[in-house]
Length: 211
Image (cartoon, rainbow, N blue to C red; front, side, top):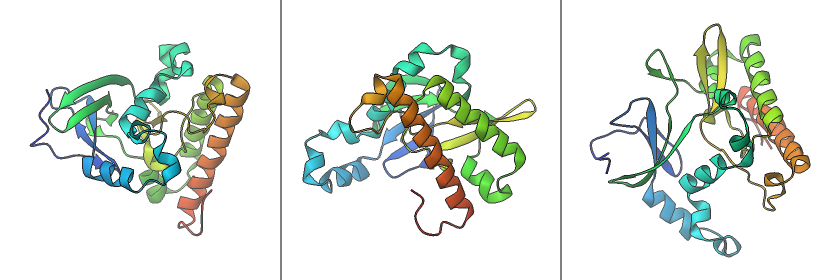
């Protein structure tokens, strides 16, 4: 069992905390914030409760996303734009999901959101985003809504490489994209449209809605 009792999370979302793996600093451990998770389950509308509580466990949903056929079929070199997945381990804070921790020169990689707020939509980062979206379409990678703070920037030689670290898997209520390429392509194109909508919303000062 991994003891995270004395560890400080380097990132925290609405339902999870992310820690550097104490035995391997090239990996991170994501654990469910049990208090937030319990409150989330309590506040679900009745029609969502019938789906079962594990449907709202972000770790299990992410693990399910990594099992999608597109990630099983593509060559390992095509993992260039996604954090690698290493499965589950037991921690003193509950079950932890282990993934690659993206770094630049020993430091945790910054997010696309941070980059956009600091530098704006530069030609360099625009090119990197286009390469990322081409990878999504070419491999039909299913994601939830692609948010800039769930993307990090890896400095690779003379290029900036976008990597997705959260939000893997389909959010389609009827899972047709998981089984049919026709629906997968439509689904991925829609995620890309929404990604750009969110980027433009962030850059506009977040006025109004972004969907």
